[in-house]
Image 1: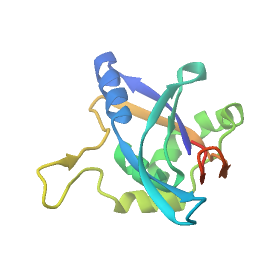
Image 2 (image 1 turned 30 degrees about the horizontal axis):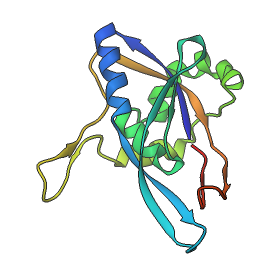
Image 3 (image 1 turned 120 degrees about the vertical axis):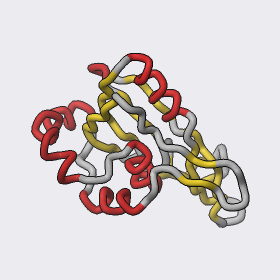
Length: 156
C-alpha cells in the first residue's frame, strides 16, 4: 500500500517526523508456496520523496488503519472538509484514490501509542508538534506469486 501526502512544518520537526516514519515496522503476511501456510514477517515502513515535494509511504495494505492512527489522522469528516477540494485534483497525477471512510473509523479505534505487555518497550506514534500531514490518497500494490522467492505476497 502506498500513502501519498505532503508534510508541512518547521524543518527540524519535519526531519524528526521522517525519521519516526522510517523507524516503524509492520506485519507482512506472505503465503509460503512450498508449505501453503501463511507466514508473518516484519517489514519496515518505507518513506520516499516523490513529485511536487510530496511523500510516498509504503507499508502492507492490512496496516492502513494503523498507519492513519500512527500519524493522527482518524476523522475523515474533519480532515477532508478542509483539504478535500485542494488535494482531490492531485489523485490522478499520483495514480491514487481517496481513503474509504470505513478505514478512518477503524483508525479511530486504534491507539496511536501503546506499551507491550511484559516489557518496558513501547510503540510510539509519528505525531510531531508543528507538523501537518496533508493526505492526497492511497494506491494498492499488486499481489502475485513470486516464484524466485517462493512466496505469494503483496509486492511492496
